[in-house]
Length: 245
Ligand code: NDP
Image (tube, rainbow, N blue to C red):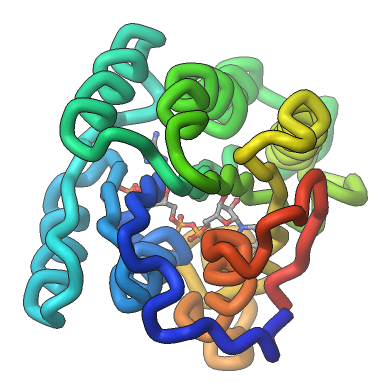
């Protein structure tokens, strides 16, 4: 998918929400979507990071973004419903939603898995996605064409020793993607997942501390697949598991 060349104005007049937009792949996606004409809604938990991305977008002269500070760990269904209402009031509809934020949790033997950590990972990586998607689907229905994108992982497609809680959360994400894709087949909403592949971010460094980050692609270098799924070139693509590398 890296060979896909997005038109400069691919996302013009589109409003796209990116979760975890303050850092890593989410930050790169927000910048790339804005560069291609989208009005980006930056959602994340560290306001300072979101403000830095906001400033970068504004300084580049891209469409003025919006910031939604939200910690997915503690957010309630009402928070998502309020957010959906605000988005509808402000933008009329939502053209794109990139579920990108997630946490790694603790890697280790299954026998040592901590239920506190499992609960946290499932809350952030799965339950928050369910609540946010449920709240935003009605606003996405109002878009001419809408794209819902989930972020998976290699271990969301094939389990691996010591990756238990994170792998389980990513399999759940893939299951959610497939179920919603099937339900909305033939509608204006397409639903797909991306496995970014090994990418130079804080999460990757945390999972592979001994690895040399310079050997990895940067988040900015894997944006072709993200752009493809968000733009109208992918209309009709539904229920697919894509790889960004
Ligand atoms: P990072 O850890 O670099 O960034 C994660 C982002 O998610 C941050 O902006 C972070 O915000 C946000 N986030 C985390 N927890 C919460 C929360 N409770 N509420 C709101 N926002 C939160 O990760 P990556 O960029 O590497 O990963 C992005 C996605 O790609 C994830 O879904 C990850 O699982 C997936 N992935 C990444 C791979 C890689 O090699 N990097 C490989 C395979 C999959 P803050 O900075 O404020 O904490």
